[in-house]
Image 1 (tube, rainbow, N blue to C red):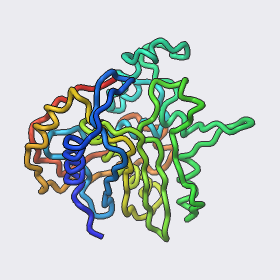
Image 2: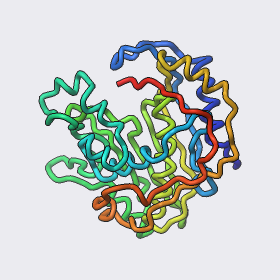
Image 3: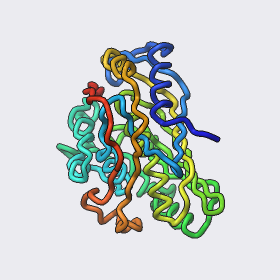
Length: 291
């Protein structure tokens, strides 16, 4: 099966949202959106390319830093920023409902979000499960119980965090020494967030394969609500008018010294993780962020 270049998949769905999206008001942000239900992007992690986009310059460091922050179980926006992902400041300090939440510990606190849940998933009756450790250990031993799932989704804990997870579940699957990933996302901000989430899905599979000495094969990101905010429409049309540059030979370089969950927990920066070959792109577009 030949996989279409990830940017072409991304742009095709963006065009579909703009032309055929259902218009509705997003209650959290108070901004109208155009949305489509049920879209999937397929990533050939084995052969590449790493899923950057060329129709606008987009970050490559911060998506990796943010995902490593999830793997570490971070709960504070400043700690994410120290790794190289400053995006959590807005959710920590500008979301009205979170600012009014009595469990918020103060400036930059994000509460129980993403990896903080997955690394300490509550067990009924007491105790916790470290889902990341469980899956790394299983795959290393060539075990696949058809439930090798890291999930950040816990409705009983939503009131303890600044934001419900968007990319909420990573389902790894092993066939022989080949590792696959099916990732699930409830809400996809196509202009900003999806560009990050595609990179993170690729990163999750390639890095997990490295940690467990397996071969990364194919990852698929399934998105339920794919949307573009009304204050992004004009800028998205500008981006869609640009010709994609598909000659970039983008590759992910993993830090060879980060070989275990303990190494991830001890990580202080992401300098050893790099994306190479991202050399040709159109100018950046500053999309407004809907917090």
